[in-house]
Image (cartoon, rainbow, N blue to C red; front, side, top):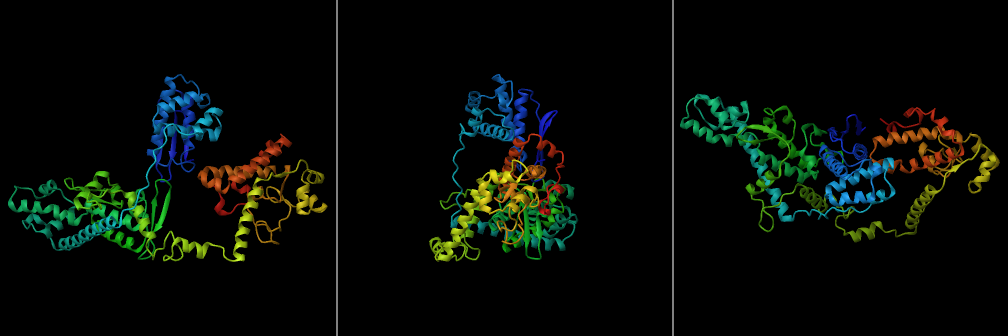
Length: 577
């Protein structure tokens, strides 16, 4: 389970898509019933059923929960969510800020979706407009052509010069020797640090020992240059990171958290890069050639530094010497101050001459903008011929010009409309195991399908049974080639106009309902509703009709349901975990 409600002591335990976990125990004993209700709502908001997919986001909901418990306790609420009144809840939200309102509103809505615990007036208030609406955000605009060119040229210059200095320092280190003999050359300094790692001035003094002489002072003065040549610092690593984002268009949080294991080499010149998108889940992308070359250069540039890094940093992609006075390698995200200082030190300016406002998401927006204007990559506006305008593309390729094309489009529309009508129709459920029942209750079905007495008897008696229903004509071609057995999956029969349901199908209907429940637990809400939502609603509808016919039928059938995949004819990709 992605999220588990813990009763003793009251709390919640969550696991997220990237493997991180969040466990929180409620130490506040105020409004315990309301606290449990809100935690139950929060559990259903955790990925994959909701958007809560990180400890930091879960902590935001925790703060909102504690604030609501404190306020409701001070105002005399003794029960849980079911005891909330519309006036009391509106008063709380008007006193709270936007973040606390949005989090508690989401938890209450999630709880009501699962349990229906809220009063009708409170449910209407929860589903209504917020008292503190989210401020309207202006979408990020791509950098202008000149700003983009200056930024890319600066990054390329920094990475090219730094890598050239690195290669020269490595060559010098190969010919150097221990500098304690008194030969304080650049080659000997490079030899020392390639053996012992990046050294601060204090570490260098401790290594040299003895009194401070002029040659040693000169060597110490050259130490920062030798260290910067051998080991990439923050400026160099950030330039590589910016250039990598400009070449790939990967989301910033995905780039910042990359590790060496995320790059899967497919041959000598192709890389499949796996990363985690913060608002979604794990994704992958095949890198373009220039991004592959840049990544190869960076791995070569940072390889020596990784030998001296702590285990927790050694496998991170953007490793660097962040504090020269300490001389220790580290990795992690680049903070806002680092970005602003990088822009100032390297003189990257906007079109108005001010320092460029560096926003990593604008890098991605600019990548999309430039990709759409690059002929070799294709265009989001004109996907067939980049030299055409959108109007010409529509006239040439999207307009149905011939009668045959118009007929094909109209047929697609008619099929879609017929499918909607079929889904809205009530299921055909027999009121008894008699032939007369079908002819009496569903004369339109008998007439439409042109069923004779033999076919009606087979439908009622069982020879035409499939998994969850009896099929009026398996060769009709409704879900496959006409004249061939129907290839539809078992749940498709629930919405098929040829399906006839009888009490003998109750056990398999309950098994299918249990399968839907297992799929619900492992799939995101949107995915489940798109794939199984209409069928899950229909199986409840059919079971409701059967229960009204015979209240003892479903309890008897439930005794034969083991809630395992082997009860249903499934393909390997449809099995639940």
